[in-house]
Image 1 (cartoon, rainbow, N blue to C red):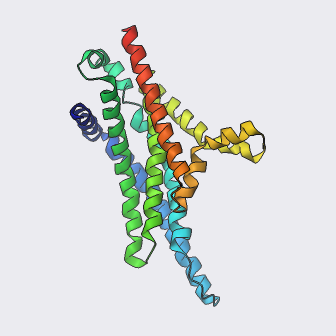
Image 2 (cartoon, rainbow, N blue to C red; image 1 turned 180 degrees about the horizontal axis):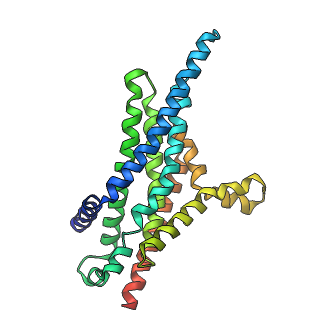
Length: 255
């Protein structure tokens, strides 16, 4: 456990010692801030129009603002996650420190967990920007905080599953650009797999559609904590880290 914390702390320092962390947080803050402003402005205008037309039923801020924002945040994460994971092992290979890492007394699983948790923490810091924006809603209204927390948990689980895939891909190359591009392609494929259900109803299409991360995030965005979706994301995380372990084992044997 100590080695995992040491590796995690080292990786976190490398994120914030370079412009990577600040750039990713700034990109997310600008894009999500624009979405937040647009969603709240639309909500206010529609609310005023509703009052002027004599409609007494209040609009639900969770349905009109928070839920679309959480969905938009997951889309932004699709582009940022490859930037987080592309350097995890590819940089070690490029700089020549991979051999030292393989021959050190640190076990492969400790290395994997340390690097993965650092990537997950980095992604959590990015999501913290979204949480700060959503917290502003409590100053001017009374949104339901429970669905909001469920949605943020869904974002973290979805991001964690994609980060695990990106961690594995980072072990397969020494080029960070290739690692980032391949991770984005894999994440995008997992994103659009549910499209097949729109034109095919066969059993294989349902299986392919079930593997889409979007389908399993929808319940979180609605504020519903469904155990099958939690199990799906946790299984993807375990699968991605399992592939990473096998890849490192292969590197060790080849070395």
